Amino acid sequence: MLAKSVRVAAAAAACAAIATAAYATTHNGQGNGRTTAQSVGGHPQTEVAQRLAQPHRVPRNGLVKGMRLPVEDYMLSNADTAQVEDARSAVESSCMQREGFTFNPPSARDTVPAGYDEANMERRYGLIDDAVARTHGYQLPGAADPSQEQAESDAEEKAENRTDAWDKALDEVCIPEANKKIGIINPTDPAGELSAQSLEATKTQAPVAKALAAWSSCMNRAGYSLRSPLDAPAAFPPAAAGHTVTKPSQAEEKTATADVTCKKSSRLVAVWYKAEVAYQTKQIAPHKEQLQAQKARNTKLVDNARAVLATSGNQ
Image 1 (cartoon, rainbow, N blue to C red):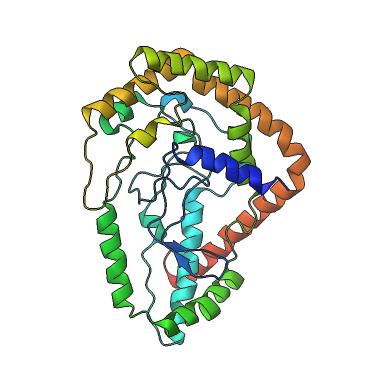
Image 2: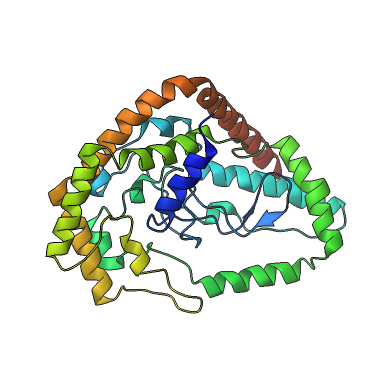
């Protein structure tokens, strides 16, 4: 199995820069209780719901147009992940009703992550589209106000009258039932580990390092001191609770626009993508059995989810 420490290191290096999205509300599949959100690709910088059109399997815009990494063949799409979460919620809701409690989580399909899947190609190398840079800066389009999300979560908790007994029924009876009927999303995640590993490992390869240096020099000439595009968003964090940013500041807009311009002149995205494709192609072979098992598990998850949703009328 790919070393988890490598994945953690890669995620830590990238999470401050790669904007990702999350489902509005989900729980972990391990039977240890619910969490507020499930982040995509192991990069939990932006845990706000994205009410956007479902991304395409292969990006159609910007500098990543037409790019798809080999490891994505083994990943569950974000749309399918939402469907699985909804099926799990249907099982848990019915179970909680039998236990004498109310549990009505909102649909995971009402919120769509920024990328097609865990690889998050749309923001894997940071900003990749001029129009997005000019309009939204480093923010994700359609980001919900965190305070609004918290208010909705609080209202949901109050309506369900959650108590220790409620938690016990969900954790010890209903989540295990969903685990059995639907399955658990990524109990192991070799595809995600390889995705994070390749991003980290390739950035020090000579062609990528050269392109990164060229990007940094371009940014310096434009008046911005940055070593990597993965560092840039940290200077412009998402809106704080109670504040919804509809337009980036002039400084953010200029920085973001320069960022994309410098990616073009340095060919950073094309170079990094080529390096990742080569790296992943070599690494897939020795982990083929694990990856194929993950792919088969994903297929079974989706089949189970669709069967449950068809029965519950929520498909």
